[in-house]
Length: 190
Ligand code: B4P
Image 1 (tube, rainbow, N blue to C red):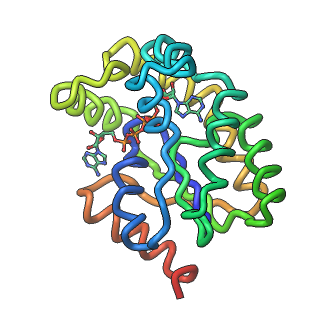
Image 2: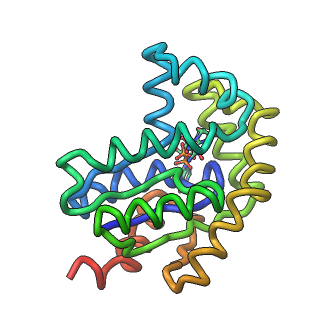
């Protein structure tokens, strides 16, 4: 099962991917988590990414693709993976297509979590208070939402045109959203 989770910041991608990995028994690959690990380790890549992430902008496509290629080539992805946070623009969507063709593992699902903007802002404010993530400041959140509208929203259209898009309502409790995802993915689980 190869699944891409799409949606704006705060739509619940990371939250639901953490649950879906248990259900589908495939690894959860979050490009945000991979980048935050590089930042925490102080690697040259992390040093480059830190400022960009704190501003709420996208880290360069080359860095992301290199990171993704090396993660996807690990043995634990033999039965698939859940990709969270990638692709975030059309160039990344094309690069992912090429990568999956190269490894002979086509995409099964692109799932969009749909959540209204007011609720996104509310959820991220909640996380800012609880966890203090560097990119959850109001200014950075405004940038992330703008970047999403300008660069990531076209990716939704890309998957719609390829006939791979499934839209899931992301409003509700964690359990409610998870149940909808399970229902949407049920045919693939059988
Ligand atoms: P990410 O880590 O992907 O951050 P995100 O979009 O905010 O999503 P996340 O998964 O963390 O949050 P979620 O909605 O689950 O990216 C961070 C940065 O990394 C980017 O801005 C960029 O700089 C860089 N980056 C990552 N990938 C990149 C790429 N491909 N190319 C370039 N740059 C890249 O959760 C948010 C909050 O909502 C949580 O507190 C959660 O508890 C809450 N929540 C979720 N579901 C809820 C629900 N149903 N009800 C109530 N609260 C809920």
